[in-house]
Length: 308
Image (cartoon, rainbow, N blue to C red; front, side, top):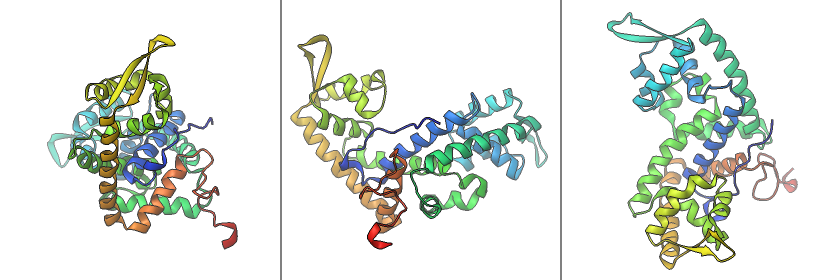
């Protein structure tokens, strides 16, 4: 399978667990989508697995247990029902409600999705050189969502992709609250860091540094320009292009953003433990590296040569 590489991460961001978890979650989802049957998504796998392991659930209960927005869950279930993978039946415990049951076709599709997800997880884990490193990653992620780890079937919580999605969502909420308390929009932090390195540069080059398509950053660039955080000038060599660079206000904003990120990280480390947070960051960075090199250049999970 072709590797789906993540963009390089600036050294100023490598110590922030919430940021790394989000990046790793995006990578895990891309790898899964590349392997899953056409039209199927990782969230559907989780729903089908839960129904297979524990039997019929109401739609509301599924949404609550999996921390999925109710509107999103409605759309997800509609798609599964339309494909005859789940069926609505009267809940025997309460005839006023409906429960969702896995169909035979759903069980067969789940088997195919399991195989596809196994392939995606192997690709995701490839940079981790030992089974012990992979187990440790799972243990650390589960320690950040202990309630889910205790309440959901092991078949669900054994998936690194699922754990990354939930950890990224929870830590992301803390990160957003911490940054916005200082008037900082979370989506702009990585963009300001990338621009600080690449400036002066075109919008297309900035998008490439972020690993996204050019049109996807147009709105954010507009917001930064409106807020006097960046300057946007016509490229004298090509008047169709703009050249971007940070303003003094933008540079100050970036400094405050990194300080706020650091404050959020200290909270996470206080909960998880300084050593554990550092270890988790190293494992997450490995997932985002095509070669899986640790800080010293060796594969993550291997001991240094002088320690063997």
